Length: 79
Image (cartoon, rainbow, N blue to C red; front, side, top):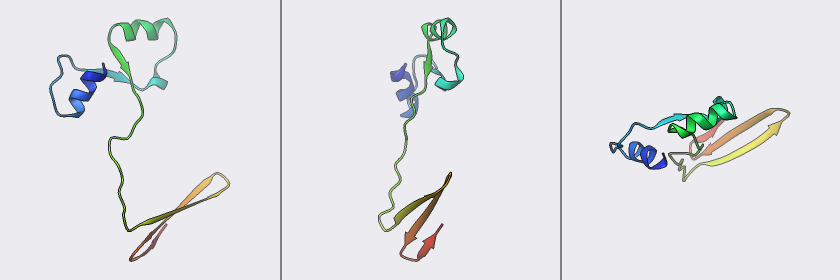
């Protein structure tokens, strides 16, 4: 399955269209095993890009359940 997904992500044509589902959307047990045996793949959460901000400093602070992020750039602050 991973080879087919990688082919699609790299702009290539796989031999079969890969079928994926978010792992938390598929109930565990016999149904899951049957679906996976028929070729259903589970997602693996990973970034497909990387953020690069060479002149930006990022500050984070928590207050209760909130996360406040401030970006400090050469032109000023964003929050």
